[in-house]
Picture 1: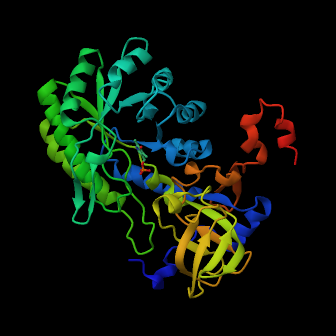
Picture 2: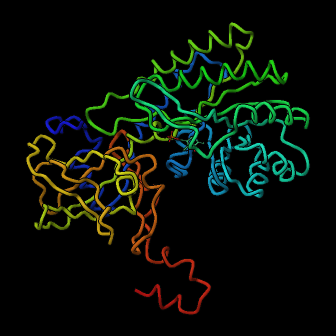
Length: 432
Ligand SMILES: *Cc1c(COP(=O)(O)O)cnc(C)c1O
């Protein structure tokens, strides 16, 4: 478990001095993203899969749906994996079209299929019953290229201590349905086929992708044998995790790439399918470590416990409240001080689960200190909401040369009240 002595092991990507400079211009709380970290990571990912000619990462837009960041990843070769119409709209606005869009949605409204098809995106079917809906959505004819999402059911063991239970997951089709789905797609004129599965989330092990790949490679050989359909791309989806705890070893993306390659050579190349493209839809792995929530300590309270109140709350970062997720915290400028004070670090929501940390041992925190909440770059801002009338924060991109750029302004009360703008009390409401 978490070893408090190793507090110092996560290093913030910004200094206190720089964070204060930014905070003077854009008040806390704000999200800060590390451009160089993002770029280095995506370049390593591409290298790790360079052995596969058709390899492509489709960034899972839902993780961090900011057009500036999606564009940055696109400039480095990534497409978009979208889950909704608004995410497709981001792709469209950035000029990302066609084969660069994967639409891996579920419980999908028909009109979203229509919208995706209008952009030429690849529809990744979550269910066999949606074939008819996609047909209807696309003017009576299925798109030329489609993908199907697989769910083998049962328990998925990655290693002795890491497993997940696809049987409980709402996504994807059973093995029998998958065969049937490809038969129908082929009959209805689809010419190019993909397969997709997402069987475990936030895996911090180099074994997940290789194990998943093996399952999908074996399956596509069976699909070829039973239906005559030749699958041309295998989508390993998301699920590569990040070490939220300082004691965890990060994934080795090169070991992961090699593991997939080994399975590929054995199952596909050996069986005349050495031209199958690999794609991924990573979200957390792409941005998680390269984004942080920066917040100021504004209140302290000494009751049955020691509390530090910050100016961010679960509205800005929901993972601790929602999943009890651990996010490491650094007190900027005090990285070298001994961690000898035990605190609950809280937000201001009227919810007792609004705590960024519980019984966390940290250096002594003074009012005005800046706290750097690590690993919030994915599934952080994007899960935000507006409970208690709280407003969402700004997002800022920090560049390698120390300059920084606002990439989303903070919400104002006007944004919060915007959906009342059709009522006569609106003008009064937004008058400060
Ligand atoms: C959420 C999601 C992803 C990204 O997952 P990460 O855990 O962020 O890598 C990819 N594909 C689909 C279909 C998803 O729902």
